[in-house]
Length: 153
Image (cartoon, rainbow, N blue to C red; front, side, top):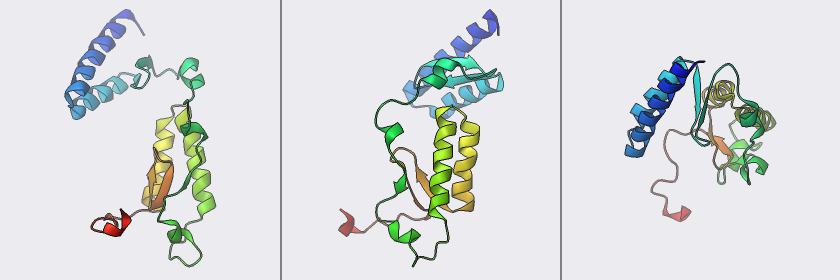
């Protein structure tokens, strides 16, 4: 990369940050996608960017801090029966845990392409919904089963 590219990237990142502050996320995402097309990866959490010749060691070494990385995947509360022997679901729960752990490995290395492929497989092929923040999964449902169910609260 060169100084011209760096100046262009910094200018685009400044405009992108303005869009993000205004809540114009579609426009901000468009700039991110344009940068990716130029071979530039952006990490919003760390406020850094790099060329896609490879992920810098400092990024790879900077693993998530706190409870998230130590938290284990689990079935979302209230959906355990969907995975029992009496359920109609034929999903192998051990396989799901294995895929989620593999996906976490990709995510920790910033390999979001492969992480997203695994998430798509879980959603499209196994019909599962994954909540990364809570580290839970459940059978995918088009409608929210708790809407109108006052007993849940």
